[in-house]
Length: 296
Image (cartoon, rainbow, N blue to C red; front, side, top):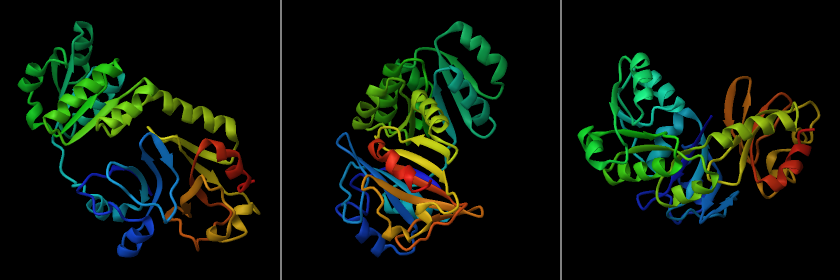
């Protein structure tokens, strides 16, 4: 299964439609909307909830349905060839190390020491010394014909600013590192949708360790208040006693899907969870404990 964050603009075919209506009109697309971030508020949706323009929708789907889901949301899948990475920090360096084997990568940093280090490692990348906030320099490096821009300097402000510059030049794919958690909502409001935050990633590992052995994975949904849990179902757990639609599951939580014998399934109301399944649950923090009781 795959989890997508989709920003719904005017081109989306689901605007002003309820989740029930979208599912009814597209029976061949297997998906489940598990969270909607709207006006700084996170919603765990029901079938009656309606998508509106500028929603950030977290949707879980199967690999075979990704293309159709993207078309439904008004997105176009395209080939990425040219990439600019702003910042030669550890994230930028590791990203370039992998991407340079498949793509045309340019990495920009203003530190002489870092440029020297990058030159020893990135033998297939173009390494440029300069200030990524300089528009003329970005133009010289071909920002107007770039397919993807990755802003991973040590400054959240610089990353947001340079990402907005890339957006101005119509770069199709932009990824922004935002270390200040308070800035995440601001970044999304100005149209930066692909946000990464190391503190939230670290928090995911800590939470997984603290909760219990039933939890195999915890992911914080960047910009949203909800969390994604992958829970291993124990024998005789309450969640195995009834189909999902008959469970008294918390209102602020939703079962997105489950993995059984290595195969992923989108959760439906009639789905019956079994012992040994790995169940993906999206939940608001206040209902975390209630959700855990279904797996004990």
